[in-house]
Amino acid sequence: MKIFVTGKSGIGKTTLLKKVNEFCLKRGITTCGFITEEVRKDNVRVGFTLVDLKTGESFDFASIFKETPYKFGKYFLDMDKFNIIIEDIFCQEGEVFILDEIGKMEFLSDRFRERLYSLLESDKNIIASLHRDFIPDFKKYGKIYYLTYDNRDTVQEEIKKELINI
Image (tube, rainbow, N blue to C red; front, side, top):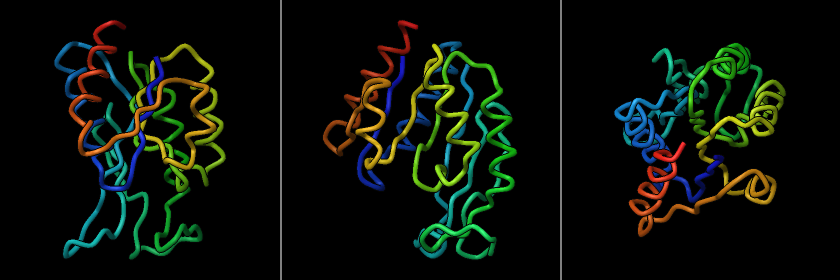
């Protein structure tokens, strides 16, 4: 099972993946992977924190405040730490990999791309949020849901049904 959730920024992709993770844990389905949380200051997004689902550890992946040699748009990226964390995350065991997100910032890491494509070619179960520009490249790997305000609950229920069958 490989499921990708895409849609406009702020539509609820991360929220959906958090709910899917909670559902899995309640059902005894082991998960691993990561969630990317927005960091806001005065109601303005100023960065992203990456949270390891297995360990609960987190680190600031992107920030407008902490300068690094790596930049994407207005964000400075901690790619050195990201590469280390990604190695750990992709070596974890779980019945379902939850990846939030497969996006342009993450794709700046060669290590992330290599580990991701290896995972996609495996028989592992994956549920991931996917940047909408990547839809053409990823539709060959699995099912893609385009999330909207109207279908968020329906998509969540469909994913839960598929999880029950693994």
